[in-house]
Length: 314
Image 1 (cartoon, rainbow, N blue to C red):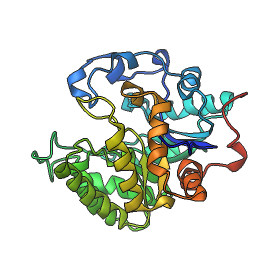
Image 2 (cartoon, rainbow, N blue to C red; image 1 turned 180 degrees about the vertical axis):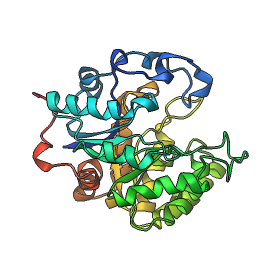
Image 3 (cartoon, helix red, strand yellow; image 1 turned 90 degrees about the vertical axis):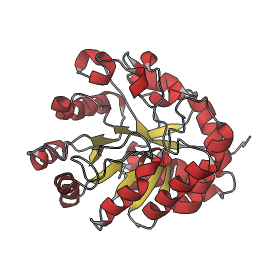
């Protein structure tokens, strides 16, 4: 096990919610463990606020964070952004916000303009429609990565200097690269290391092709986050392999650590996640490791260095 643990961390992906202050359909109604990629998520169906986040990160030296939209009701996306700014004002984090805008909405551009009136907004996460498995295709259907209307919404981000956080499973990564290539200059963060859920040689071969296609696009970075597997316990050994290969494909300057709290806690506590990622990074020199843990996210999400002072005491 690596002892090269981080001295400072920017958590490039986490969530907060208060169920009494918003509507979260996936948490408050229609509970369906079979539809969630990690199965039973009943433990998540409660508030996860600032104190919960601080308790979850334990002794991890978090200096700044990035909040990614938490599937709040799409009618309340702007309310979520407003609430996060109030949280920041009271507690000093999150330090950047990835909001939700639905690209198929007729007023998508107006929604974007409303979000960017809030100073912490750096980008948008709008999930494309995906297939249920590698052998199932939805290619070209409404809301997919080939839908021209959906792609027009994605293209709006460049005009507002916003980035796109993309979350698709490994079998859609090549399609994501095709879509991104249509918009030169669009900055993109690939969430959760491309979700390599199938750690067999065949599954990783598909994942590797997609990640290589994405890495060929210079404005694309990747988050080392959420290595939990569907229907399987935490697998540290294969996760170390995925971390090493991801860094090998993208280079250390285009990789960022992220917790995906509280969802990641369904498979492993954050201390175990950090130890595993640290083992995957141990071949890097100190500057490269610091870039992955802290510096790359500071730059990519344009976090004010004066605010990256840590969560304790705020």
